[in-house]
Length: 145
Image (tube, rainbow, N blue to C red; front, side):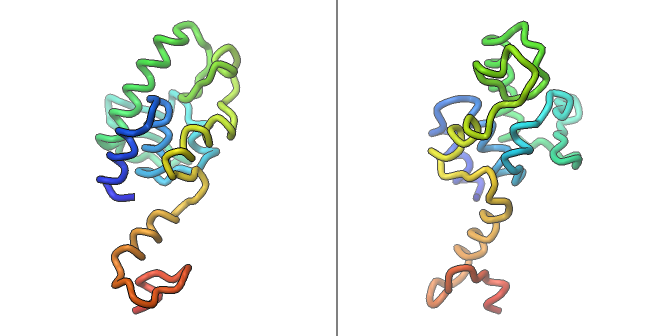
């Protein structure tokens, strides 16, 4: 997704949890399981870094804003939770397990983001950058050259 598309989705996403899930999926290409199991220890605001699948990455403006918004809401809604996962739901706030795949899909799917598409957005970006005539499904500009 382009920065403009991500920004549009961030604006139209109804909840801060949805905005965070979209940011992680679109900006960092995080898969569903990775988003669900992201822990508070994986977020370092002082160094503006986030650890995703063992990789330490720069947080970026969109991700930082989405994280701050969600973590503020999370702290307000569940101030005494012991759950160390970043995303919480009513079902997981009183325990120690991550949110369900169903919960995550409810956050992402209405905004056209699939948590397990992997690099599909990058392929889509390649296709959109190509001249449009005669591009077969599944081909990218790199394959056409």
